[in-house]
Image (cartoon, rainbow, N blue to C red; front, top):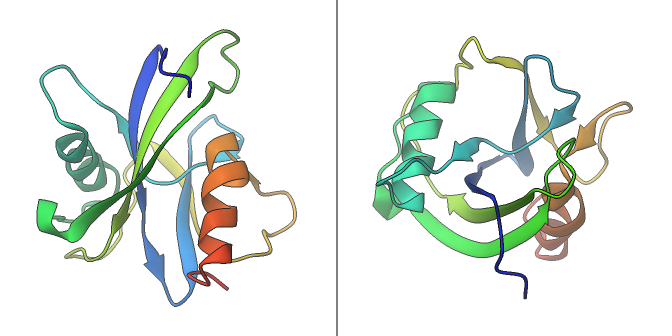
Length: 138
């Protein structure tokens, strides 16, 4: 397994009514799961909790997240840069999901993506198939 990476991110799997929450940031074409970069001095769990609050105004506590897996992929639009993404299930959150000003669009997606929706490579090739195979999304 590749362990060399230049970007470290935490990603959250939020599922409601058999659909996965994805978001597209302003100026981007690709949808990704909520989350973001791990900052210096933070654990991955702390980064995910902070990002969910910043991006969507929801409160998540560490006992409501479970690690799934760590994935590696080339960063979109950044040749030679590798992302390490620690992905977690977010079992519960408090508050309504309200995207902040950096988020252009939010979707709840199932097995069949709407026309024109492109997921980031880790979610398209790794996470979504895993969720489908476990019958977690429909």
